[in-house]
Each structure stands twice: as structure tokens, then as C-alpha cells.
Length: 474
Image 1 (cartoon, one colour):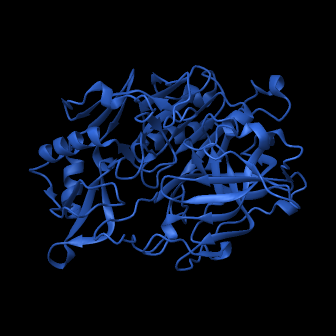
Image 2 (cartoon, helix red, strand yellow):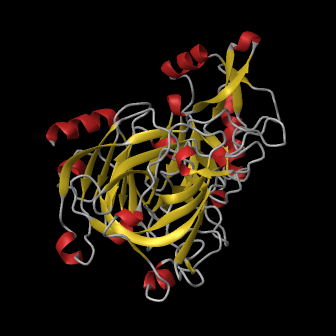
Image 3 (cartoon, helix red, strand yellow):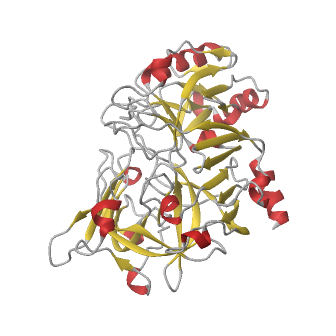
């Protein structure tokens, strides 16, 4: 996923209960509470969105990510990593990596230098079981490079067409005041991002020092065998994302008796969905939940249950993903949502009226309105709330989270009106076969991933206030 420069600096309260390498029994109940670190809502600093050859079709990409600071190696090297519950293998841009930047941007990521770390070790095919079987959950398993290197190669790709290639390696990771934990990761030597592509979507290789990407890598948090969660034996983690530049928090490990998790609001849990047999389009290591309905205001949309459940191929699962910005719905659910939202807002918002305009290739429910008009409608709570009804829980999306102002797009006399799009995209148009609940719709929601009990919990929360309360206890 693309990463950009930071212009917001919320505060993260990070509590850790990490499993030290080779010490499972001793470390599973250890707690490290009260460590305060910055959690950043990271926004790309790039030129206006590039258009595809089809007029007014803005290419799909992730503009905003959630990042955490991590220290890696010995002596520790400070890096910034995207928190991604939709990915497995963590990775870092390593010295010598090639990253596209068109045009070159002033802010660059701090590449990790493995040769400067005494605890760094690359995995080799001849002696590494990790290369042979632990990568079984990855879409493209690790593979052996030919002599003389005999290195274990990794190749990763994402829905927005970004990709990363490098070698499988291991080193120590430090988060806040927790003890160091050894984990496998991808030491990336080549990275291509759609956000820095040219007008035809082609990334141009350039030195990492010229990159607009300010994050050094990605922290994979799904349930795969090579994820950071699995490798460290973390059985529970939670986060609360504040909108704008407010403070947010991340809690790793602990239990309900801990100060951080006991401060959580009353959660409604939904069970994780499991499949007993592999299916071609079902991601078995994702945080998959059951979407049972969608409402707009008080109107429950007439969507058949079969549309919201995975089919015989596994297509149609619903994933909770902190690494995706917005929420995506398959076409048979997106169409009625779009129609009902347009109907309920007809007196408030003027449709854009440009059938060929599609923001990021997947968002075509768009409007034209001044910033003042949208702000007034939001403040007056006139926009209908959209509810994603899960089994036992609901994710409610309202107010400012419903509309996104498209950068660089103005309409009306003298550019008096901005272009706004509903923050629900069409999965089919984006080339995805799943429903995805992105982090934009998780703002001001306490989200807990309870792996021990195979469930995810949700509750509305003022994340800025929750962070302040926990910081005061630390």
C-alpha cells in the first residue's frame, strides 16, 4: 500500500503483551502497560489524482494509512510502519530498495539497514523451514532464489496495485517499553506504488531517498502464520481511531483486568467466520465477519441474505481491515445503498450529474456542494446514518464519515462547489470479490480483535478522550 508524509500527530497509548521468541509459557501473560507512543493518521503528499485513459475515472489507491513507530534491530533503528489487519507478512524498505517517485518528493522514508544490525539474519532456503512451510498462508508463498544467494524471496501485492519484493529475514522488534521480540519480516528491495505512478498507472523506479513515501514498512496483523500477531503470540489487541488530528490509541495484549482494556466501552461482539475447507476467493486468515444487513437511516435495504454471505467459491466475505481507507461493497449491495442514499439526500445534496466520473475507480455516488453546505448538513445531523449490521454488532457510519471531498475537483461558477463522494465504494469496480470495512469508518469506534475467543468487538467511543484518560493513568 502507498505511504505518504505525515501531517497529523495523534498520541497512541500502546500496551503490550508480546510473546518473546522461544519463551511462550513465560511471556503469554506478561503485561507492559502505560507506554505512550504516537499513532499517526498518515496522508499522502502527492500531485492531484492521476486519471486513467477513460475520462473522469480516478485511479483506485489508498490515500491514508494508520502508522505506528517501531524500533528494529540492535542497535535499534527507528522506523514507521503501517498498521494493517488485512495483511500477513510485515515488511520494511531496506537499504538499496527502489521506490517510484514521480515527481521526486522531499520527504523520504528511513530505510532499514540490515547490515548495521547485529541481530539481523536473512532466511536461507537450505536451512529455513520458514521459507518452506510457514509462508503457506501468503497468496504467493516464499520461494528460493538461485545460487549463489540461495535467499528466500518474498513477493507481495495489494488491491491498489502496489507491490513489494525482497527477501525473508528476521530481527528484533521493539514497541514502546516492551521487551524485544524476534520476528520474521520481508526486507524489501523493490517497491512500486500506484500513488506515485504516472498518468497511465506506471510506477517509475527511483532511489528511496527521492520517495514521497514517509513510512518505512507495514506491520502485518492478520491471523496468518507469518503475521506479527501470530509470531508474537498476541491473543488480543484493540485500537480507537480519532478523526482528523485528534489523539488515537492502540492496545496490544493484556486482558480485561488491565488498565487499558478495562477503560474500553461496553463492546458488542461479532464472531469470526471460519471455513473448514480452502476456497479460491476466501481469505482464511483475514478478520472475516458476517454482514447481515445494511440500513440507511431507519430503512433496512432489501438485500437478500445470500448476497451478503460468501458463495461456494468464497467470494463475498466481509473483512475488517485497518489497512484499507474506505469501505467497499459488492455490486448487488452497493447499488441499493447508492439508490437509497441518493433518495434520502435529494433535498440536501445535488448529484454531480457526470455519469463518467468515478473517484478512485470505485466511487460513483458523487455530489456537488459548497463546503459550507456540507458542513451545515453534517452539523445538523441531516445526512442519513448508514449502518453495517453484523451478527451481534453494528458499525454505524454518520456525519463527516459519509462524504469525502475529492482533491482538486471544483465545479460551479468560480469553483464555488467541491465534489463530494459517498465513502462506500463498489468492490466489483475495484476488482475485489469481498466486502471490506475500512479504517475511515472505524473512526471513533473502539475495535477489539479477540483472537482467543474468535471474535471482533465494536463500540462507539470518543477516541481522543479515551486516549487522554489512559494517558492520565500511565
